[in-house]
Image 1: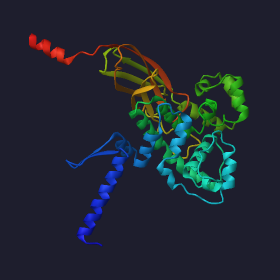
Image 2: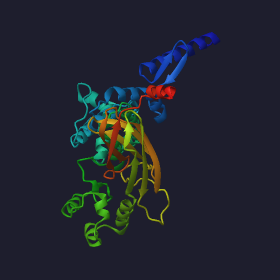
Image 3: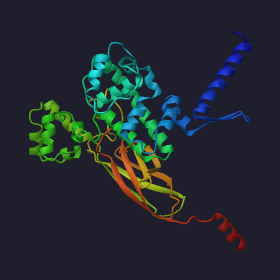
Length: 382
């Protein structure tokens, strides 16, 4: 019916069921006495990245302290957002041929090939791997792949936040690395880093790089002119210009930081950082879009600063930043509870390029915490 009472009853039931679903997913807490609804950390992550609460719940349930890159790929492919991926019948043969060329086995789904290829999770997994492997796809699948790539980056950023909220270092770093792979269309650990550079991905030039000891984009920057000319011999002037443009845009960032080494157990520790990008004085202050020939969309470059306790694989703090020519920022975290010498690690992780991440040692001398009650007693005696 459409009476005021019926509409009111319907809306009340809708709100109650929605809050029940969000509460079950641990995205909100509901105080029935005060009729108060409070978002949890998972709920705020879902709202910030505009993703399904089901996806955030699945991330929280699926991630584990030791989840690595392959596990992150499996989990993000199962995101609720990819249920909208088109399923076209009679593509089984094409998908099977693509799957045979992929390095990582696809997730299992259903009993036969028909049900397997009808699974959005399997198709998403396949399309991401095909992108990392730079496989040519039919037009329909290429359009599907572009749609998946548009969705996967905010999902990976949300996964970083979920892992960070649980204090898990390994899955957070793996999600960051998968973001780099998605933008540059390369396999981390499988492909040479110079494959990111346009026109250097062919077997002959990769072999030349290997013979010349050129492993990273920084090595391409530092090559002697004669060696670089030999490596790029045969490329058209426009292609050489694309190589130079990529290498010049590749982030080269110098980091300096300081921190008070003597801290009390459990107290707040502040790391003060200065980040300076090597940049041509004649260029604009802010670097332009990321150079990513195989990524179908323009996007800005982003970074994470991470502080962790590597022995326990515990993530203590993470901060998302954008770096222009210069950035001064502070990252705060709680000092370890264990007294004595604490050897921590700080990571600077890019979300768009491989091979430019940095790692630093941070050592603290953790002192016993001051008992505030004792201080109060002493003040009273005085």
